[in-house]
Image 1 (cartoon, rainbow, N blue to C red):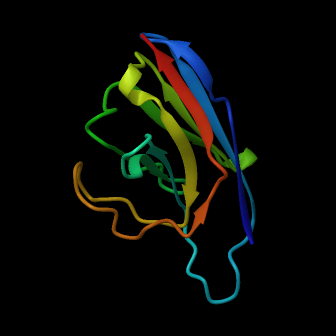
Image 2: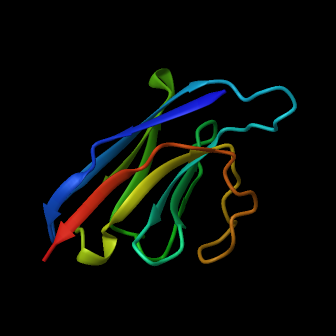
Length: 131
């Protein structure tokens, strides 16, 4: 099975930065169709879980939701089986539980639906931005 372990969350003032990390281990089971898509989702209180960034770790192709474009950067280190989310210019509305996800397909364009909802999830990590 696949394990995803997030780290790097916490509390920061508006305008500040945080960097999330997600280390992947294990393999997809049996007939489960895994791939090299990984991403970051966030789930604010009382709202739906939304995919904010995605990356195909093989090609490096990336995706960003409009709400984070220009402020967040997703990257990968394939040697460490780890992806990162660098979050700059943070706003209070960025506060949420952030989840690392894997084995997915993100939208071909911003604002579209994820073509395949992730098969694997991390445990989630809290990010709080204070004004």
